[in-house]
Amino acid sequence: KVQNLWKEADFRRRDEVEGAPDYEQQLILANGQEIWGLDPDGELWRPEWGFIAIGSGSRFAYGAAAILDRWSSDGRSLVIEAIETAARFDAATGGDIRVLRVE
Image (cartoon, rainbow, N blue to C red; front, side):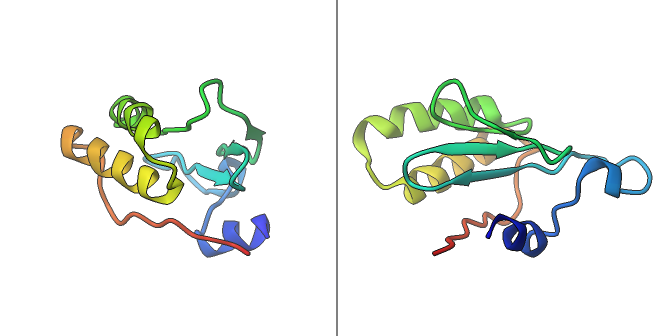
């Protein structure tokens, strides 16, 4: 299933990209119990704090997630709100928010 998401998101490992990309692609994976990051080298890693935020707006997303986690049990809404908060306060954060669910 992860491989299908990888292809759907057009995620490519660093060694599969010709030339120097202007940003590094990363994926965040979760199953409702655990969360992992998938880095540009294709390596899975686990966060220290129970959240993963990547990119220039990550400090804003971490802050929003930490606060929202106290009042919300809906992980999808928390993720979207944390990304929207990061985009509101960081000019380099933006674009379409895609939260994909695999059953």
